[in-house]
Amino acid sequence: MEPKTLIIIGAGRVAAKHVKAARALKDKMKLIAVVDTNAEAAERLIEASKLTYSAEIKVYSDYEAAIKELKPDMAAITLPSGLHFKVATFALNNNCNILLEKPMTMSSAESHALYDLSKENGLKIAMGHIYRYFPLVKLIKDDIAAGKVGDITHGTITVRWGHDQAYYDQAAWRGTWKSDGGAMMNQTIHAIDLLIWLMNSDAVEATALIAKRSHNIEAEDTGMAVLRLQSGALAQIEGTTSTSPSEQMACFNILGTKGSIELGLHNKRPFLSIKNESGKSLNMSYISRQLKDGGIKSFTYALNPHTAIYNDLCDKLVKGGEPTADAKAGYTSVDNMLGIYKSALLKETVTLPLKDNFSTVEMEEYKF
Image (cartoon, rainbow, N blue to C red):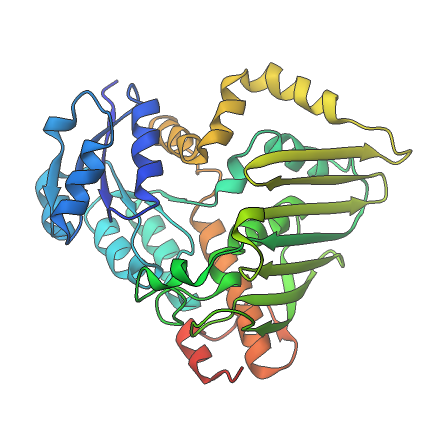
């Protein structure tokens, strides 16, 4: 079959990962355009792509013109979060499937609207929730759902993804309530999505505190929350950018009556500890199963999870079905995250899913 055509809207830092995926999946997808109001940024991205057909890739400053003229199968939206809803709505209304970076939107109503629109138009949304695509994650998900870890008592996330002030200063929208959010919305939402997905139960309550400890930004650089799940299990969340940039880490723990699971990244290096109820390590068993099911290629996807996201999306466009991180994952993670913010703002426990619309703009009232 002909490769699926792709345009990238936004030539910022994360766009390079999308280009790398296009290079790795050249038999399944073809990048045909880069859209950015800064033509030089788009041209630099194409030049650095190392794609054999890079001379054929077009540059647009207007995403509407690119979508209308090229009619791509997929559009990757790598813009500031505050622009996601507007651009994604246009793409979905013009017969274009999308890969949308996190968070889906900055309000609960907008995220639900995108979900509804994708269903009405028969199109797919793949979310950039990269942790769902890491090796072993699907095996762990299936085993938890099958009861092999027993009843889940609780889970924890620790995301210490340090950034200096220069990271926020490089773009005016970074760290703002309207366009970005803080450490919880930006750096920690991947982990929140994965933990709740793995624990196999929806969140029904959120209790949270946020703080601004070391950065000159509008939003928080440190947050802590507890989610109560429908199953009765608790999920504890810590997210911060106030730690050292040279010691970035994300760690997940899930504890059940028949075992425990710990996985994470430290300075881009993965670590893993899976044990049964007697404390015996099951690490090699899981690694062997992953090799049998997906081969060594499934481990190489960890080097650039966007490759796995696109591989999954292209397959679902051909064979049917929903992406692993689909539109529902997008709005659920936004609901959970905005519930955390609302709890911090109101200084009380909030019921999930949110019944009324809430957006990050409302957090401008928050007094640190």
